[in-house]
Structures are given as structure tokens and as C-alpha cells.
Image (cartoon, rainbow, N blue to C red; front, side, top):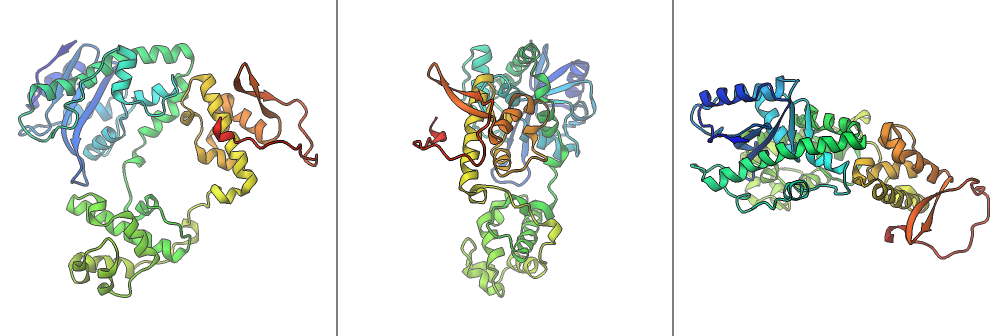
Length: 408
């Protein structure tokens, strides 16, 4: 593979894009800083196909990224390969208003080939290529110029390794027949709605125990206000006001701006400064949340009842066993909230009861909750066991010591 010098001019970028524009796939990675900003500051883009690799400096004077971005978002014949690429995709969306498509994420791909939930990049490289990466440059300040050779070599390695791993991973996915398992996951990753946050919907990200319409209406107004403040100042949301403070203000709003000085998480200056005034305006303009906008009451925890919680635990145990048998990350098959919904009696709109997930797990989960499936121990291992004749619902319970399914 030819590794090109760091691209620092628009002309050099055009030449590189001409070299790779007919590739079946390109591996993509970015280096960015966002600790002190709302918008991630893009500092470096790395791209490779099977023959060429290069780093592109977006901070170079008069750099025009359009040729590369056009390949990312407009070339539907080229697959874009990332590893744990959510933030990389977000950056491209911020720059173009579009997401790369089609897309493949090797972290998700690995979930279909092993039980690791979120395998890190260095572990992926070691597993597939037997190479141990030097992580020393990982946490450097990528915004400082000039970049030194160690930084550039480290960054380019991210895509040269990825360009070698992806064809190997794809071949194994085809061989195991699991490639189509990932189609839905990749489409979710490329969905633009994941990266376009409507300020009026920002409140959904904040945890609050109350379900009162007036409290949630205040939370909606406060979260929208904070979202706009953070964007306009290019500061992290938590640098404006932390989530827990917003939730407290929504549940216990002060009577006037002077009361902001007594709110935990706000300084005394909020009693009289402009931002405190804008916060109070958000509270004053808040309206109770419409019934149609109220969040669904999720069938979780105590809402399941004691028996439902036990059934959910058994479903989690069943999922763990099935994931081990298939050598697949359990989270790719089903999520905890789906198991709890099934335990609570729901059957509609549950992903694990559809498509390939139903084939590999959903039908067994239904068998368990409907009395057609149990557990057995074979050769010292816990396995699923089919029950041909379910015990009648009104049958007397068998006296036996309780089994804690979560300990298995």
C-alpha cells in the first residue's frame, strides 16, 4: 500500500480523490477535539483503500474538503468503512448536512462474529492482524501544528489496518451467512436523524423521574434553551447547565430570577446576569406537555411486578446462553428493554420478534414466556430445553429452592 505525504493543499486533495474515486470501499477515520466546544473541531481526516492511504489536514490554509466530502456522501457505489464511527459520521453530517452512505462499521461487524459488545480498535487489530498498536499518540492535541511524524504515522495506521481487516471480516460474514444481520444496524448508523437534534426534542436526553405534564413541559423549554445557548456559544451543553440542574429546575422552578442564586449547580451571578434572564424567559414561556407528546411508560423495573422481573431475568439468561452458542454479542440480538417488554406481555413492535432475530432467538424467547421452553444442564453447561407439554397454569407449584438466574 502506498502511503502518501500529509495532504495540505486543495490541489493535492483533488489528485488523491481521483486515485480512489473508483474504489469498492474506503476506510475512513478522523481525529478531532471537542472537550471545550459544542461542535467537534475536525483536525485530521485519514482515508485508505486497498492501494493508497493519506492523511488530509482540514486546518491547512485555504483547504477545500469538497472533493473528499462529495465522495463520502454522494458516491453510492463506494462503501465507507469506519470503526465505532458514530462521531466520525456526525462530523461529516455537520459539514455537509448528509451522512456517508452506504456504510459499514467494523465494531458492529465484530459483534456478529464474536461476543465482544464494543471491541476497541486496538483489540480488533490485534485479533485480526496480530499487531499490537502503540497508543502513545492517541491523546495528543490534534489541533496543534505542525503534526509530528509519530502522530501522522499513528493516524494513518488507523485506516491502513482497517483497509486490511474489512475484506477479511466481510469474507467471514459471507461464509457464516451473517452479513444480512447487519444491514439494519448499518442503516441506523447512517440515519441523518441521529445527528440532527431538534432543540425542542433535546429534553428526551435528560433523565427525570416525573411524568407530570407541567414538569416535562418546563424541561422541554429549558433543554431547548440550553441547546440554542450551547450552539451559539460553541460550548458543551454541560458547560452551560448540567442535566441534573435542568431536571431540578423543571421540577422545582424558582419564583423569580433572584431564586436562581440558590439553585445547586448555578453561581450567584445568575441572579442578575443576562443568561439567567434568558433561562427565566424559558421557564416563563414553558407550557405543559401535550398528552400526545408524553413519553411512553416503559415496562421496566418495579412496573413489571415481582413475577415479571423474574421472567425478564430468565429471558436475559436465555439471551446469554444463545449468544454464547452463536458466538454473537447479545446486544446485537436483543436489548434489555425488549426483554422487559416481552416479560410484561407485549408482543408488538419488538425488534427481536422480527426477521433474523426471531429466527435465532425471538421464537425461543416466546417459548420461554409461554411455557414451552426451560433450562437444563448438559455436561456441566446450562442449555435451553424444549418442553413438549407445558404445565397447566393452575397446577400447584413445585416446592424447590429458588434459582438466581443472574448468577449463571
